[in-house]
Image 1 (cartoon, protein in one colour):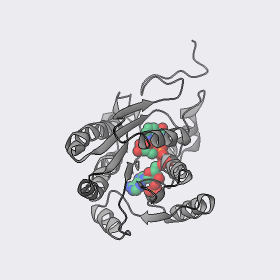
Image 2 (tube, helix red, strand yellow):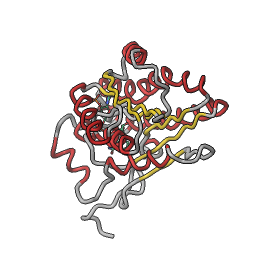
Image 3 (cartoon, rainbow, N blue to C red):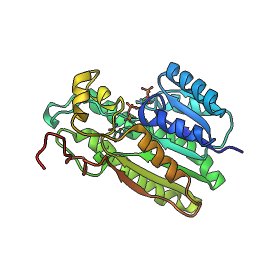
Length: 254
Ligand SMILES: NC(=O)c1ccc[n+]([C@@H]2O[C@H](COP(=O)([O-])OP(=O)(O)OC[C@H]3O[C@@H](n4cnc5c(N)ncnc54)[C@H](OP(=O)(O)O)[C@@H]3O)[C@@H](O)[C@H]2O)c1
């Protein structure tokens, strides 16, 4: 029987690429996000291309009741892999000038949303003594960068939670992997800069960033290792980025 992967934030970027990678590998998918039309279109495309079953579930990870209701309404299929990917950065400013609504949005999505989804799905993994949680962190989880304050804090939290989950769930034979990507060209910067296309494009000018498919390939690798092997923590960047602070662009003198 096909294994099942549950992906949050599958309407765009990493989540959509992970969905495609696992569909190509014959998995059954449960794809989630807030934009139903995108979920429907992706499900139809992946089913047509790969002949796999794709279930869509539309909810906002910040809404605890909606998370629980949406997951309870799914067919009773055991989830083998949970990818906690839904997340965002909102704004980029010093702490004294930060927009507190942006802070709430990032904390509620990146930390609390990840917790709500995990809390709802993982008891079934515990009962079955089988499962793999893959949390998408960031290089921002390892090194803070200028004006990144609250976004970095939420990703540090993802790192801490991944470590904690691993300790808590080891006794149940559940794997926990944290993947920490650097700059990748998705809708991420467009969301951070609230639709400012040129500011978003500027982030990636002068370098070749990661592609969503690079992250999807890495998730695939981590998820398909022998049963006794677990990648705990993995940081990946494009060739010209060292960490969340330091990257070399074409214009820089080497
Ligand atoms: N791109 C990068 O440079 C980069 C680097 C390191 C880490 N990351 C992390 O990687 C993850 C994916 O980012 P991405 O680059 O793929 O960005 P993206 O293209 O903007 O995708 C973000 C996804 O998250 C979903 N999402 C956001 N808020 C949500 C909410 N409240 N409820 C449910 N779903 C929500 C979005 O779906 P809906 O809008 O349809 O809800 C979308 O599918 C994020 O956690 C991000 O922090 C990104």
